[in-house]
Length: 403
Image (cartoon, rainbow, N blue to C red; front, top):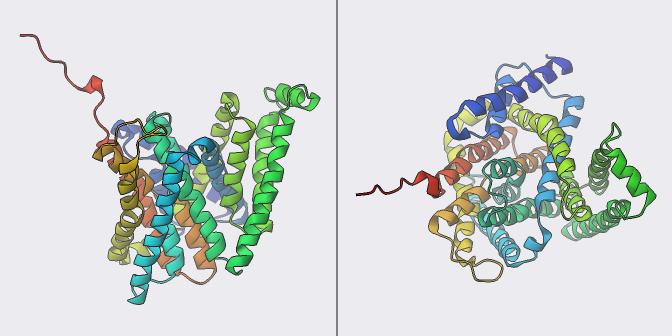
């Protein structure tokens, strides 16, 4: 059995090799996240058995998951969520959840599927944290399409986490709602701390600003403290750590409404340089290749269900998008298709939901592997397909020749 140090070496090697291989692919059509997952499958216990999970690696994995959702929450513009686009995204996600319960419930009656509640929640998720690097690299974050994807992604992450807390908890639904309210109150209380630390004229604020560019790195340390604090609060309330990490991202954005480029660069270095690759490699290590290969029909069925339950409602909902002031032109079919494909891209929450279901004895490990593999395929195929649907830029259109 590989030691923890040997396992960490192979995980670190995978984290280095994945972006190098991704850079060799023309136009970077294969996302680095997919290569990290594939590398994790190869070095994991189900193939070469070069790396295994341990308590130390599991801690880094959870921090990677936390940073992924903190950055996702940080990118969300709360004014967008409360605007027309955000309200439409919320209604769309609720429609997806209802459709998921109907479809999965019917399949459950036929005995074709188990753990219906967990599968239904997983089908409605959007991997916003996974999509962020793709949207950033393509320069889409500041565009209308990018903002729309962020809206759907925000509710595609927050909605399933809340649904998990209510529907997959050992508590009753009423008790779960009380716990969620208590967590929200605790998060609001924590939110006043970073805002107070940045108050102008404060001696403490000046110390923090001066230390941010020294070896103290005060702003980075405070961000990590904020993340760990809300993860600990979520754990105390017996909630998924994703909820705490997402709340930490929201709070960080509230403390810095206009952003902080230096801090963002440091957090990106810590997150994407170390912690997030560990999360994706270890997620790949958990995929049982034999179980996936033994049931290709189930894998294909999960992929179809993701597109049906999550992608199709988003595609139809975007028909009513006219911008925040109802003055923008209606999105084209290509643009609606792009948003739908991005919204149907899911992985981290699928991993989280299946882990909860497996630990509760509601889902078998083999079915969890197939569902996670389906999520990995969406990360590989759907963003790539969405990028191919993008219209050609003016520079790519040849100029007419003079006669």
